[in-house]
Image (cartoon, rainbow, N blue to C red; front, side):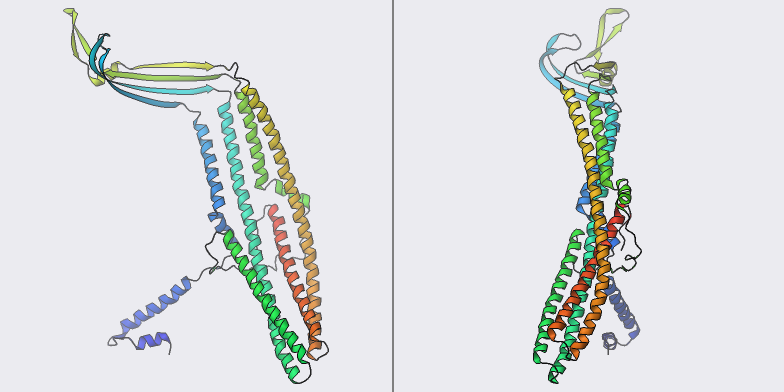
Length: 474
């Protein structure tokens, strides 16, 4: 009887069993659904790359830097517009002070307020504002390319870690298969020893070989666990618990007709695509703007400024003149808002500043800017040279791994036939255990070399295609 049936039959109240059966069914289905929902998904290479690019701290930091560059560009454009500043002053004084009505000094309490607006706009500044906008634009483009370069590096590291897991999985499977063969061979050898066909030393040798292969299985499992840890650390996951990768079909990638493109073809594609080259070129352009900014300091600067002011004083009075008695004006309180309106004034001006001698600073800035341009020209050249060397190395690795893989395929086929023949002779007592174990170890070594060559070949051709702007696909 299942637990589910037991639950139905042992419900406390069975007078109306239908509701309880419905509740029990719902609980049972929900438990199955919950169990399925708790299963963690299998991660494909694309899942790993997307997760890393969205959550990697270094990528986020570089993206923040890009946002700051974008803000600098926006600000440099806004700097072309006039500024506007407002001011307010409130003061109180007691004692001898100037009477705003009679313009004589008297002992009195005065409360005063003043308001002002000021604006300034640069008309000409040696084109420094326009060149600053261009420079900030180039800095933004370089920062965006830095983000792409960082993402490319992370993608390659993830692909390498992903392939390492696949390799270690197959190496573990090879070790387990060899251990299983040895365990089966122990049973056969035991029967032959009991029958007197083989000496007992053969059985001891097979058991020793089995013990060594058990250690190899443990080591292979440890290497697989470490490779999982490496990938989860790149992804910034908390732990490896429940983490499992998808096993892709790699047969389509190992194409016998695949032709590795020449170095020059790959380089011509890479130099026009890869972000590290573009980043260096944008920074060179930014440095060229530094030279123009320095040269702009030699020109006069022209700006227009304007101001608007008004004032209020508590001592001010308003005079009203009687046409019949103009010599005796009538003093009246001067309202606050009337004072602000009557006392308003404004002005506009043009200012020109001509640099005459600034202790040779401009010439020094211009000279250093030219040196920086030469330095960044060398940086661009060095970036391209390093890229060419990397592609040369990737091409050589791809050729070597392809040759090694093809040779390993033939070697494994030959070793499998040789081991099968040795195993048959061992089973009938024509070969001793030492020769049998030697043949078996050689087969294991050859199979391991084939797996390593296969994954090196897969990674190498992916690197070549990555330089040409194609995504890594497994």
